[in-house]
Every structure is written in C-alpha cells, then in structure tokens.
Length: 99
Image (cartoon, rainbow, N blue to C red):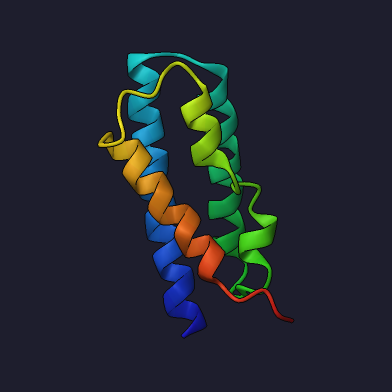
C-alpha cells in the first residue's frame, strides 16, 4: 500500500509542478517560485525514499492552497492549479504520520 500511495503522490506532485510552470509563463510571482521549490523537494524526497512516514507533515506544503488564494494571481476556484494543488494537499494529509 505504501508504494501505491507514494506513486500517487509522485504523479500528483508532477502534475502540480507542470501547472505551476505553466502559470509562471503567464505571470511571474515570487509565490510560484517558492511553491515550485517546495514541490521539487517533495518530488525528490518521494523518489529517494519509499517510506511515507511523516511525508504529509514534512512536505512544507501545508497551507499552500490558502497561501495561493492570498496572492493576486489566482484566477478562480475552477483553475486547474487550484484543483490539483488541493488534491495534493488532501493526499498528503491522509498519509499516516505514525512511525
């Protein structure tokens, strides 16, 4: 089960990275740079380890969607980046944190 969860997180993280890169082409904003860096860290950690313990807590993405809404670059609730980032945050939140 762990490897399936990890693979799902990898796929979703890559999806969000692609959307952030697309958004950066439309509008450059420091928040997008920060988000992209954190997403790349998450992708790297899921590639280097097969352990999901604490992944949700340690990803540094908690609250990213809310922070995105606090910027002036959000288009709507139906924006693909909003939808996919929300899915990723939910996935990370649902991963057990027990050791």
